[in-house]
Length: 187
Image (cartoon, rainbow, N blue to C red):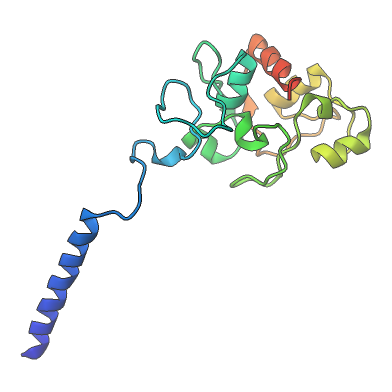
């Protein structure tokens, strides 16, 4: 007879502790609406909370907007194929993998390659050893504007080799890709 009474009170204690836990969270949790993209959601007109000072929220050019958000100045999402699955689920852009500075170098979630340094000065450097050590590229000729476009759109390096599958293939208009390359020149 003691066992059912003990189980009854144990059940009551579990229910009460669960209710107490629901009443008082011990931390500030972001709303579920925005939870998946904390802390640096970058898409325009969809996020009102102030951003940390090192994350851009105002853009001086269409190229910079594309680099940070994956959207162009007309508000169109730049379509992509390939790349990590989270790109389709959560969205993303160049900055998601290559970073604010364009230097890359940090492994990305669900990726097999470390993102390269995509600053224009590094990509177009004539010294193959500089390309290999600074940007993480295998030895290949320096990029040109045309081969940068091929890398962005088709995932092809200047020597014709295919980039790692974690590099998305972006379906960008001629104007948008020109603007993006102009922005890469500022990094």
